[in-house]
Image (cartoon, rainbow, N blue to C red; front, side, top):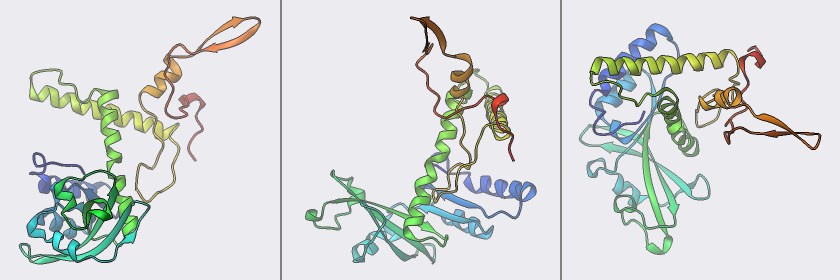
Length: 264
């Protein structure tokens, strides 16, 4: 879940409604949440734990959290890849009266970092680092948790497709009810197209540590490129030459439904 200071106020009510809906429709599934730092709140953490959900939430470097002191005491960093390393801490938040498992990451960069990230922790001769922290109750190692959080932006692709292919960001009228209905219709059309793809062309993809989408989805422009903008053929010097009518190239190997292999 992505958020900001302007849209996280009703998060608890939204999560309660979400848990109720999932219990009534699915049930029995382990829920995983990955959230921005705006959702690092005591009531949200308590609600997630009450419903048995696993979470990974970015932790802002607030002074009252005490992360800077823990970072200054960290002497051993474990490698994730060529530029990222991690260290795990149990951080007691005095204002909340409890402790959490917080995994801290530092990423080596080749430019001067923002002051709130650099924290003046290391000798400049060691280079510059950007720091981030994640509070979690998931039983994951540092590298696995890093990959899990890196997959947090996968839902942004769905938002982009809603806006570009289904006019979700359009404001057609000056009335709230009509605009709300427009967005509902956009979401319904999006789900309908995804449902068609599940039944026809969307192949399953392997499970990764990032927990991204489980299928290879075609974007709205792919069917248009394969059907509406067909390549035209011309004859020249007794040879058949194909000339594309447009420069569009589908992002995936999209197949029309009549050529699709039925799902097993």
